[in-house]
Length: 234
Image (cartoon, rainbow, N blue to C red):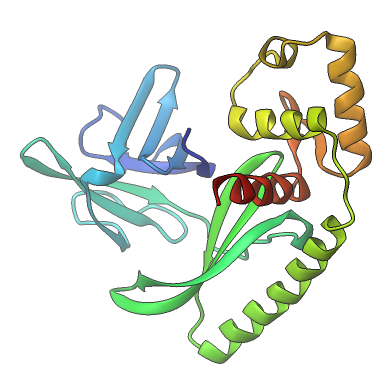
């Protein structure tokens, strides 16, 4: 299942839908598609494989949008289309306790290949990815060292953690379920009371918390599952 990389509401203008320019829509981005939803059943899904370019600003065919708009050019059959999303300017805050992983990579920013810091984190159980780029490589290196120090402290604290087999199974089940609404007793083939006991134990260990639609993994919980899967697949 694809992780949700972004989920927010914005003003959008698109060529291929009968929407007014600047229509308010929900913007969802996962690892396979960009989805714009103006209402129930009224959506535009753009496969990432069809994306040709992403640029700042608004093309001449649309009226201006607020903030710092981004335009996505994409293939629609044999035609080239555009969709513009009006994004907000301002700081993005990622709590350190929510960081699951990070990596230094190179990405194309404003047409240039630049070093970036790719940070994986969680928000209410949803896996997100934030890409940070600066004009200064030195500042990026300092940020990377700071994250490495903080992340290393979390890993060290997890080394003292002891999990039973049912607890590990519960964590991997929540990880696999993602944002799907599943019946944990049915999936785990056990009774609801036992599920509650296991979830309580994991909550006490800081690995599970209550989300909008039920129990979700904390950042620590995701780190534990990632470490477990790495050992299993090694």
